[in-house]
Amino acid sequence: MSDDGAGMSAEGVAHAFDRFAESKTIGDRALGLGLPLAKQFVEARNGTIDLVSEPGNGTLITVELPREMIITLKRHARCPGSVA
Image 1 (cartoon, rainbow, N blue to C red):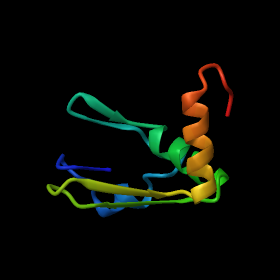
Image 2: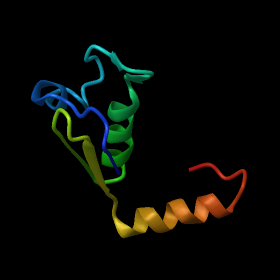
Image 3: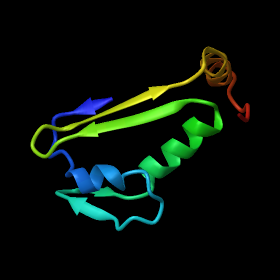
């Protein structure tokens, strides 16, 4: 995923996945628990998540999941009421 927003400082990138890092608001968007929760979800499924960002140049987040996990997620998406 990527955006062309304000980007993050090197310090912000270093702490982006920290659960208890200070939350900051940029414009109308808040930076909070979303990235730490995403990292927890991805790593619990033996995947990786990486973040590259630079002030003024936006942010790129790359998520890689094992193929078996993607097939399982697709299967659950087709079955309303199923629990992952």
